[in-house]
Length: 120
Length: 111
Image 1 (tube, one colour):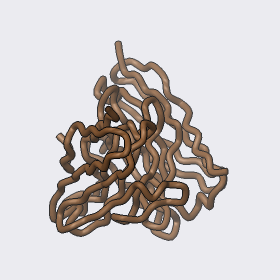
Image 2 (tube, helix red, strand yellow; image 1 turned 90 degrees about the vertical axis):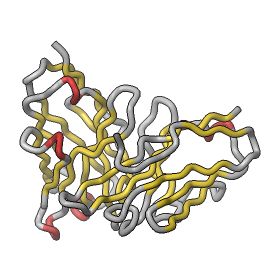
Image 3 (tube, helix red, strand yellow; image 1 turned 120 degrees about the horizontal axis):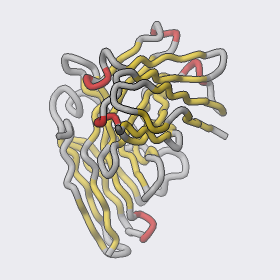
């Protein structure tokens, strides 16, 4: 059974940091490109970052709001993708989903999400 | 403001057919395939349609997708109460900075 399980969310003050993790199982993780997508309360979906697989050099790409503050990484030995978030702002509040991009299909699989709340 | 434009709401009665539009531009829908995602209340999004018109295993054939030029649409026939959800279109944008873009979402209400 395919599973994506996010962890690491919580309450943090503006300017603080959080590290999100996503543990994957049930598919060939090393072949997949992995993304983080977030959803602010009552709002739509917003892509945050993507990391390609080793065949594509593990290239990392970021949405404009994440550039310079967030860092995505992957560990194919543990089937994990992480998102290091620094200098957090209130606008970063929301549920963060881990998703796969397999065989050119973006968002093929989704985790249940982890809630990040940035508030003083 | 979303890069892709969807109507904020749609509605229909059980058994009816409803369509949801998604409008984009040359750098996104114009050159890339479109996916649709269904988000039931309180749950994570789920892939509903990929590559413009392909249904993943397990998705009923009541759901269909199409694309023409810089627009796409999702059609749901034989509406059922469990179809009440938010629907998002999404694709990659190959502009100055590559990014995955979504529509603002359409809330489908079954009357």
